[in-house]
Image (cartoon, rainbow, N blue to C red; front, top):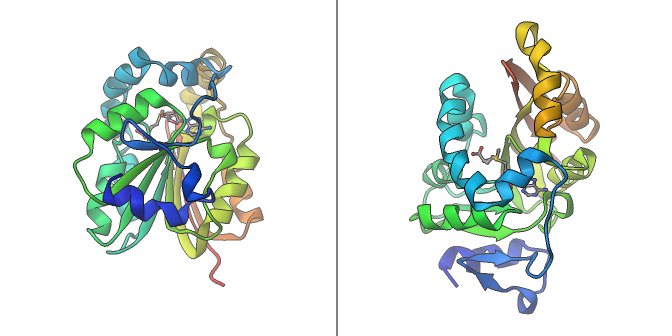
Length: 240
Ligand SMILES: C[S@@+](CC[C@H](N)C(=O)[O-])C[C@H]1O[C@@H](n2cnc3c(N)ncnc32)[C@H](O)[C@@H]1O
């Protein structure tokens, strides 16, 4: 077990003796087949799709600079503990690791074995560890992380409310979140999004859907921006 995985153990709501490391990450879904009815998510579960994502991600970064600025959006400090929910192949995870320094800790969590295999291969940073789990049954303890990012994931989950409940539960009071998801958008984008969404099986969020869910769960300072078909929402959990 790597040093980062050791440090993740106390954050998990799972007895240590039940944790097994597979391919460099804690696999909390071992032996449980994971399938998705959503076309995009089915792709991210297989090897070819996970490989194709490497080509999609640079385009997202180019057209939506917000996706390059996650450490700044979270106002990360040295020593912070951050959860990258739906980390994929670690495109953002590694930048979080650099922002929190060696005393900090980044947990990359994803449901896809193929994405996590790529993430583990790409990560040299000793303060990052990976967990395979479902965001809808997030196995982290209450108030266990200082900050959380979830980049282009929420449109793929079956139950957004369940995931946002977990997000609100695991972030400590005063902690920040930086979320992004596919959006219904405006103008020309709005004409295309119903088709894109139904083809991909992705939910296209209306402008107020994520902000109001966060507000209902005690988040404040909610900031939302939409670039084309992507919405970015940042917020802070009300301090205790
Ligand atoms: C579009 S990729 C984004 C990856 C990464 N966040 C990024 O921005 O590059 C979406 C990721 O969310 C993961 N995902 C989807 N549903 C999930 C769930 N219920 N629990 C955990 N991960 C999930 C997928 O497996 C995939 O790796």
